[in-house]
Image 1 (cartoon, rainbow, N blue to C red):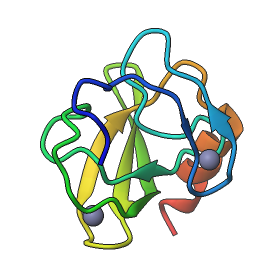
Image 2: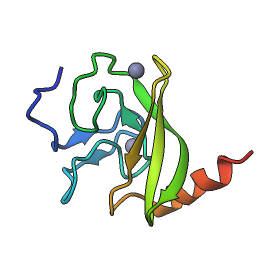
Image 3: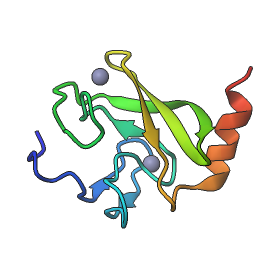
Length: 103
Ligand SMILES: [Zn+2]
Ligand SMILES: [Zn+2]
């Protein structure tokens, strides 16, 4: 379990193994290199209330009010959660997802 007050800490990506530094603006909740996440938030991004801890794949991506939003789907429990992309997310990975998402 992560301490509840550590909403913006760095971590090692469970998917690609890259060392991820804390975000500058918002709480970092996914890897900027591969966009995978971990199921640690339950209701609000950053609440760290989930006990699942499964890896979450970037299942879909769309633009909302000019910002990219990625839908993360937990491979353990199937929960889906939208998350805003960070400014330094890998844009090529992001575009790949838009191309995959529609079949
Ligand atoms: Zn990664
Ligand atoms: Zn889960």
